[in-house]
Image (cartoon, rainbow, N blue to C red; front, side, top):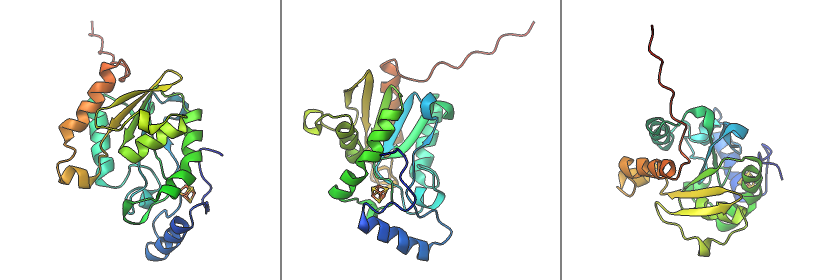
Length: 209
Ligand code: SF4
């Protein structure tokens, strides 16, 4: 399986039908699987969310672009010093699910694409946003989620010299309910840096003569 699903992937009949319904309701939207995007082979950090939001990635065709979760992720990355050229973003499930809730079988159906992404990108730091992404990454790496429990701030060795970091998802719902504060989210990136996997320091400008 390749990392990017075909635009007409129909492995999940419910999600394919939802895409078709959204094409009728929102003809200007992307309304197709949303592949990962970003630095590719140059990525030092791979961020994996749950699934495209209806009016976010499903509209723009780009993960974490077009809604408030994407805005919070971008501002937090900027504050942590991560340039776009070192970050890849994707989702565990590539198609928008009704009510942001993919089923277990839909997560499993899309796992091959996530596994191909993980295998093809050597980023040493992998950040899971939410339990579903966290467990999907572990399974894609051949590890048992039960042996590597999800918690906000959890850190697990992923094998092949890679480290998995876990955060609550930066969804608007989680922020609005206080489950994830911007400070908590920033703390995850501090943890990544504390493990020596943060962005390289920005070179200081040399003083003029
Ligand atoms: S969620 Fe993944 S496996 Fe399911 S239809 Fe979309 S691209 Fe295909």
